[in-house]
Image 1 (cartoon, rainbow, N blue to C red):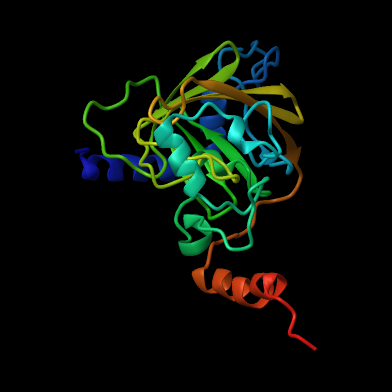
Image 2: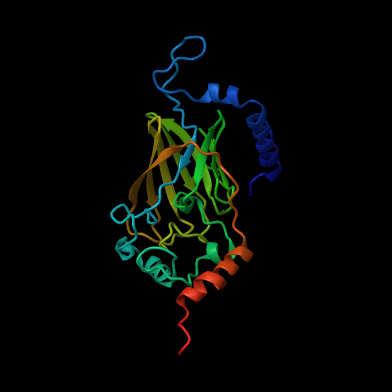
Length: 268
């Protein structure tokens, strides 16, 4: 088990640093390739500047690289265990969408998982420090911590977000994550995963206004081979706001909107 006290105080110190010294941290950790710093020295291209509010573009509810719209969700190479789990899922999007899903997030406001977070039409931002990189999501105000230049711990719990370690490579932030629980879905169309899920994200800035991520998904319990998908986000000029998941609001929407939509009209 991890030393929770050490993690708590370590994160507290970093959080205070983010609040009071953001300019110093950014100067230490990020640079636009070819740019110069305040002293006129050429900035290092090894650590890219990934800052900004990035807007998630809709229309890609699936991580299947050949079917981002989720029109053919059955075509991913599922194992027998994975196919059984997939067929039991009733998603709110894609070819198998239903107004009465059994999506744990929509039913109970369970965390949707880090991969699904990239599909919701809200923003996220990346905060870079020397020891950690933080990905802050507008939706649910969820934040991920990526520990830089360190191995995964040998003894770790399975968690909603997994354990993420990172490094800079070729102008990209590379994030390696393991240690997931199996309570979330990969995406909005109901593709499952197991606790053996292993993901690698390669995030790089294509231009000042665009951010690209190549995501490789490996899960031998659920899929017979790994697959890689790519998404691009646009820089947003809007500040991030508060967007929460409320069970009472979800139930009210289901009762007053969804159920009335699918209920048969009374006979005349």
